[in-house]
Length: 441
Image (cartoon, rainbow, N blue to C red; front, side):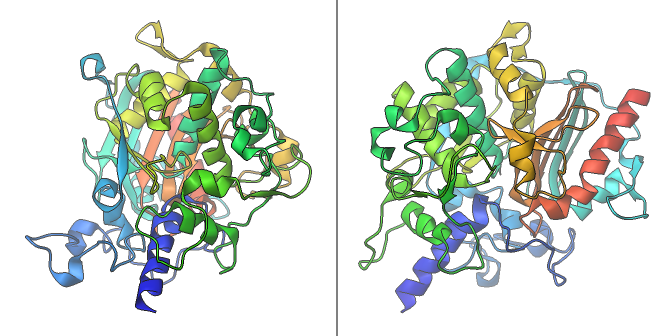
């Protein structure tokens, strides 16, 4: 009984709390510690040689991604789970330029559905921000580190990893290596009898596949738990007879209705796309990301990505990277793939992402904080007056690109609630207020 309980705890830790969208928990628990109270340095988590028993965050005895432990864990994934490296090119390092702007902390805005006014500075604590960086007209105008984060520490990117996966797929399409209208079974024969078999690559990229797959965390029989059990990189109990790893599990996913009609945010789509990327390139996903993005973009630190028991990278949410390197990624996308006058990412790949996806398919999914939104190539589009779009991840991760103001905002966070619907009311209006402020200055 103890072994089974430990295993289930690990499953929950490794896959559910880490990187998937959690719809069951949509509000911040009333008993949650404040930003300052839950600061891992304030709590003394993992401090000492060795750390005191009550301050340890580790496997397999504790839920390392429960709050407030997650406020330490987001900066220490490589110490907790097996990872592969997304290598940078040391000789290709490109420093970022600075032109710091005063007054940003004092910018005021009104959170959604309230009449109270909040400052940018106060919103950092409200959203349990670990790091915040703003680029305007190609230069850093604001940079702040909090909690567990510092300049050269990799922080869990959560589902922003999906946007990296989608961008890589668009690059391969631009290079003629991948065709988005191809059927998945034509590229990955192993998926022929799965739900993905008769879906197009584009339907996978835009998550308009129709899958009999539930990520309802409140349901103990939901498919997410079977997926988690397969993906768990730690030894499985002797009684386990299910699929091993991401790719074996994907072969078991069944089709629900017609593909291409309704947007359905399901992480298995991204892992299917990761398999497609490996199939057409003949390389592991992390090596493709290194070759197409992390090396040519002049990154400062090699990124990490968690892997399953077979060493397959978690392309749906396993990446960790520094705040500045994620800013470099956002800057390259905002600049149509240009880095220091060199076309590093094909412009056609960026153009495809910028188009946005089907508003009709998206509207049927019921995202109330994004009533006019869409989703394309695993990037979220707000379709607001500024034409903003973003990479987003649970617990508050974002790369927010505002083309009209030439602004990129990168936030890394460890909010106690996973769902961005809880964080958006004090985030999206704040981003708009910063855009207005920068334009007026």
